[in-house]
Image (cartoon, rainbow, N blue to C red; front, side, top):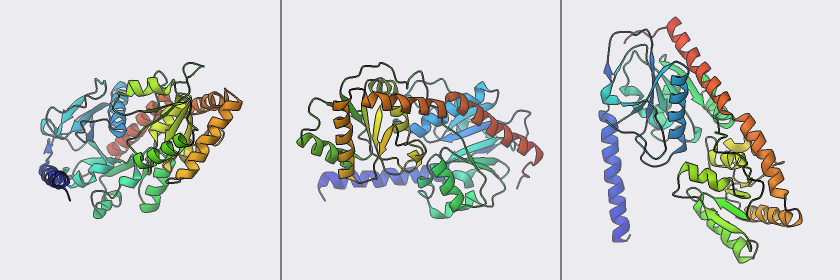
Length: 359
């Protein structure tokens, strides 16, 4: 191992140890008084770089407050707020609050190890946006999905997640909500588009390089611009997708598959991996699904699309329009708002009927 790699490895170990220590020390103050209006706190990682899952949490807090609930993003460290996207979301931190027995704490699947830190009288919801991350912290933490009377619900965002969680925890109360895609940002846009292919190299970087180099070496990409969407804002991603004909989806195991869905909403012909959760919207009449790791299958699908586009200049446009209509109808902000409000109304109503006794 080189000195540089050794230094990076040592840095990661020190950082991981510091994070574990911080998590073990995280404590929640308790207010023994009950309140007329319970508060819903979404425990949220202090993530300084773009994360689709954290954007979803911020948006759902906004939805709840707009619907008349009292909700906050609850970060670990004092003063932290995500600044990598525009928001005016209500944010607080663990040190600044006192939990009451009628409050609800929404815990992401990556923070389930913090549930033992919660006061015994406080109910919690697990917001599992990617079922494949369920066991990342430790396998024994799965007990929090089972016979804990404090568990109000497990909430997830796709059919695949729901099926996986119900198979793993048959007695678990799983509720699925549909994520909303903003049509003001992600829409089909202009009819005429340059010959542009876009992809996101953050996931599936190795496969992406192999596919693109094979296509480029065979001359298939002659006359086409290939754009890597990396290191740019969410608004800039949307603007690029609105002027792209083909989007290449490289991924492995997704909780939903938001990049591909947003590309479809923008009218792109999407080729690639559905990440399993994306199977509910990867329909063959407007996109091409490729098995994970099938580099040659990916190459074949791109070649077929480019060949079809040569014979019919509207080939990608027609399929992209169909994809956009399906995505924006199925995953509308109005549907997300209604489902999120109904979900937490049900949880709070059930809590009023069956309060948890203090331990």
